[in-house]
Length: 302
Image 1 (cartoon, one colour):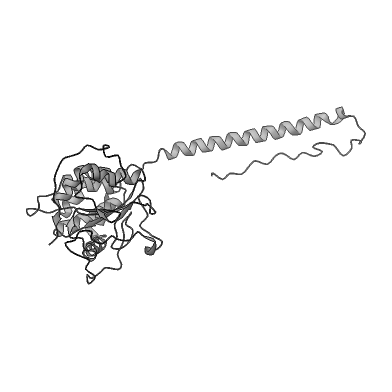
Image 2 (cartoon, rainbow, N blue to C red; image 1 turned 180 degrees about the horizontal axis):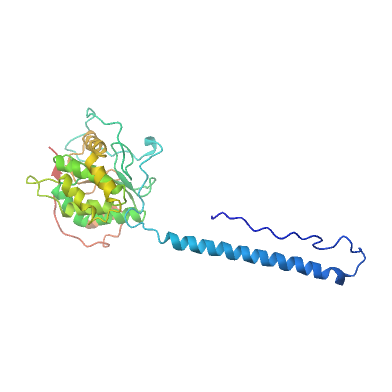
C-alpha cells in the first residue's frame, strides 16, 4: 500500500447552519450553504482519488514486470532454524550405509538458496509432502546426461507444487568440481542457479582429461547474462563458497550417498526407474515429457 496524505479541506465556517441564522429560518435560507459544503467535499475527494490512482500507475510502470524466470521459488539462505528443515535422507541404496565418523564443517558463508551448511539449494514448498533430494557433481558425466532429460521435470515439479527439490552439489571429482561448485554459488547469488548448472553440464570437460578452471568459470558471465560481473568474478576468485561446497561433499559421505546422480523422492531412489515412473514419482503426468529411452549409469564415488 502506497502511503500518502489526503489534502485538507478549506475551513468552512457555518458549514450547514450559520450562527446568525434563526432556528426558525426557512429551509431555503440555508440550502446554498449546504450545497457549497457538499460540492467542496466531492471535489476534494475526487482530486484525492485521481492523485492516488495516478501515483499507483506511475509506480507500477516504473517497477515493470517481475522477473522470476530463474528462481521462481528459491528459498532464502538465512533459515530461521535448521531444526525446521526437511531431514537429509540417508542412502537408499543397500550397497553402503551412513558414515557417522565423517568430519563436518559447521560454519560457512551460504549462497542464495542454500538451506544451511551441509544442505542443498532448495526449491519449492518447505512443507511439501513429496520432498526430493538430488545429489550431483558438476564434473560427473552421468549427471550431464541426466541433466538432458531428468532436470526439466524436477524443476517443473517444484514450480507447480508437486514436490520440493533440494540440490546437493558435491565436489568429489577433482579440484575442478570444487571450483565449479563455488562458482555456482556466485551465480546463484544473482538468480542464475538453473542457468549456471545447465551451462556447466553443456560445457563439461571430459572426465580424466580436463577440469573446470577458474578463468573458464569467470568467462561464463556473458553467456549467463550475469548483471554484476565484478561481483561474480570476485566471488569466484575469493572462493567465497568453497567451504560451503566442501560441507556438502562431507554431508554426502555422512549420509552414505555413494554415487551421482542420486535422486531420492520420499525416501525412494527413483533414478533407476523407467522414465514414465520417474515422472509419476515427481507428481507429474507420465506423458508430460518425452521419454529419452536412454540408459545411464551413475558415477560411483571412490
